Length: 134
Image 1 (spheres, helix red, strand yellow):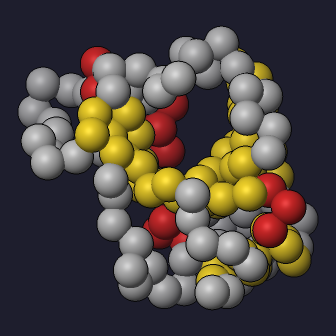
Image 2 (image 1 turned 90 degrees about the horizontal axis):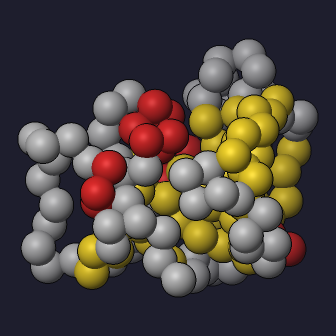
């Protein structure tokens, strides 16, 4: 199935030509920044199946896992779109909120629960990891 998405203003568009490998809620401290205090909802997809139109800007940093991270966003409207990790060169993360249609996508895993605030609800029916899964 092909999925499409993009930023809020439309300057960046993308097409995914593969189904997600995983759908996760991430409570790492960085994702809390991107999700304005909440967990980020992400799908992991093979990098080779993502086609991007437009030129995203990037923010490079080192994650709590120790991996070099590149986070891509729209330079016009600021929508955060993708994350890429030096620890997983074959796959990348796409923010679910940027999909045109997120139908059929539901989180199955929660990661970095140790970084979640005390008020966070961690769904007990989902597989959970205190940090980055192995």
